[in-house]
Length: 131
Image (cartoon, rainbow, N blue to C red; front, top):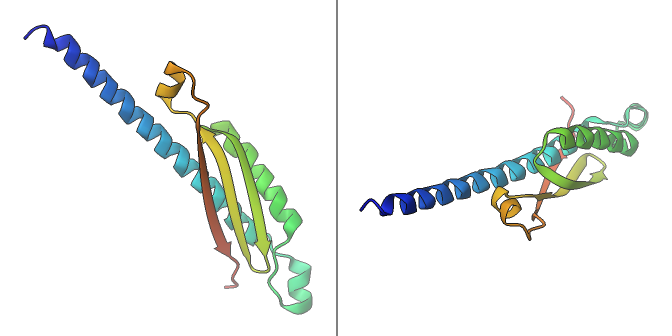
């Protein structure tokens, strides 16, 4: 019976490691989804004001949206568990769609080696509205 205690500890440690890996991957997915949502929301806030006053049309200023996307990505890379992040922003007249991709690294894969991480992706959209 006493011989089973070390085996039970090894099984317990393996289960803890799997839980930590799952939590790390979930955190990476949530962070990437948050980046995509923030990018889309900031893009629709970058309204083309001269166009709105001239014609009343709600249009997204593509240059301002691209600047905001770059700023968000720089801030994101400082604190995230995701590497190699790339975002694409599709702006339409009153809508923005942000698609982000990145690579997350599970902790166990780093210990065992041979893994280049897991590719993850997220897409979020936002609509511009007055009022």
